[in-house]
Amino acid sequence: MSQAAQTAEHGVPWPSNGISEIPFRVYTDQGQYHREQERLFKGPTWNYLCLTVELAKPGDYVATTIGETAVIVVRDAAGAINAFVNRCAHRGNLLCLERQGNVKEFGCIYHGWIYDLAGQLTGVAFEHGVRRQGGMPPEFRKEEHRLQQLRTAELGGLVFGTFSDATPDLETWLGADVTRGLLRVMNRTPHVLGRNTQVMPNNWKLYFENVKDTYHASILHLFLTTFRINRLTMPGGIYINQDGGNHYSFAKLDYAAEDTEYKNAGLRSESEFRLQDNSVVESVDEYGDGVSVQILTVFPGMVLQQVRNTIAVRVIRPRGVDKTELEWIHLGFDTDDEAMTERRLRQGNLIGPAGYIAMEDGCIGGFVQRALHYNDDGAGLVMMGGHEAESQPFRASEAAIRGFWKHYRGLMGD
Amino acid sequence: MDDLALRLGVQELIGEYAERIDEDRLEEWPDLFADPCRYLVISRSNHEAGMRQGVMYAATRGMLLDRVFSIRRANLFEPHRYRHVIGPIRLKEVTGQVAVVHSHFIVARIMHDGVTTLFATGRYLDRIDISTTPYRFSERIVVLDSDKIDTLLAIPL
Image (cartoon, rainbow over all chains, first blue to last red; front, top):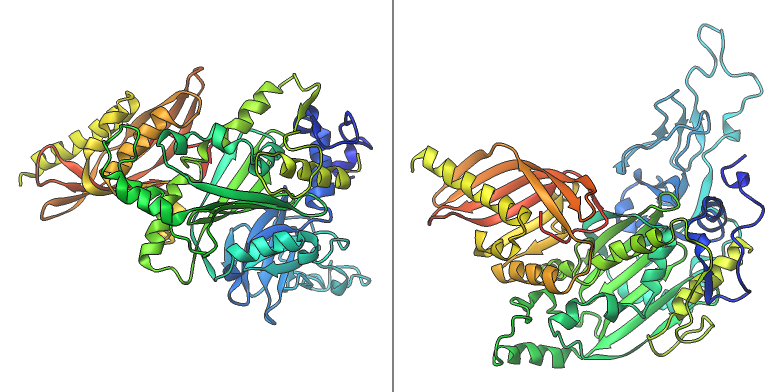
């Protein structure tokens, strides 16, 4: 019996059929958490695995997780990308312990079972016994045993995996808008500038909702307003796919006007609330479309961000009902010169665990989680901008959060 | 230069650094750096892989001052302090007016409600400008042993 099967037939009850009242127990209930692992992370969803460039050569592998489940993704000798559960078919031992590496085959350290790069069992230590004693019974066939396989897909240099045969192909599942948004950012060959993991004391959904929440940014994150950085923000909008769980929001910036602003800043009297060094926000329009912020999510656990010239993949990894690990993978591109790299590194202060406009997101979910502790009756409200989860040409809205719950309820079956 | 005097000057700078952070004198923290400078908080795995993006970075004293102003005026988080415990300094090399110094640290985080946890361990890889006294950091790379940061990093390490 799986962990999920130990839970009730149904998840946490909802107050209505809508998606604008969210029962607080979804963030605290252990049974709900198990059900999410089975129905969302191992369900018909595409989950980020790694970058294509991390699998450059045959045998290159990355050991990662989808939700709580350990998986391996590897490039085989024919050049295909394969993914499977990181669990030996014999006794269930972890096959890969290192995060990344290159192998000819996967060997289990426990009893020496060997798998090829497609996950097929090819070797069993002492299969025929020792001195004709012991060994596997005659009906045992290696070809009948393999590692549990996932489907994989690539888009824009990102590799995704799914446990389900029912998941539509990646681009169909993302939807045309979100596919376009992903390819807009990932339009060159990426490399990793750095990675780190932020451990947050809250349910994973509180972070994912925060990312989809276009309402909170100018309220919770006071850095830009405190330093009177004139954002000269022009209209943006939100695109939400049919299922609701994939989205991107964007806003444009008048880069030329901002540049003039900085040049003139030196002429004005110095305020103590002016940045001493503007290089942390000095950005260039690297996509040539004026969009300075694009936040894209892929249900249930990936974020692709462009905040000015910072590009990052964020992977949301549930680690218990009230603990979440958020991996930040900061990217540069093959076309970057040293000036561009330095620009990305300086603007890197805006994001991540110490980010000027992001650090509050690391603690706000924990505050909610504490408020819900033994106080999780009732429901929260996400009604800004209406009750539906439609694409909108403005951002003072919680539509993308409602989109999350639309997709969530559809898969959870409650 | 007298090796003992050099070591004492370096020791003083490194001790002063921890005191200014731990005693909440953050406004005086940027004065311990030359300008321009390099201050970088990065995990060991990133650093050893030759990657340059950490979690906090400053290339000028102005960027350090901005970090302090932002912590004081803009960023929202639960009040907390650090306690640095710094091991013996290792004087690796002296070239001209620059001393290369390594030391190691553990930092406890004390939340406003008293909850105290081991927040970070790692090494300081310093390049110290010894051309004037008191000495100043021309580069301080804070190499964290772990890739993981609990909740957030507001106060510099």
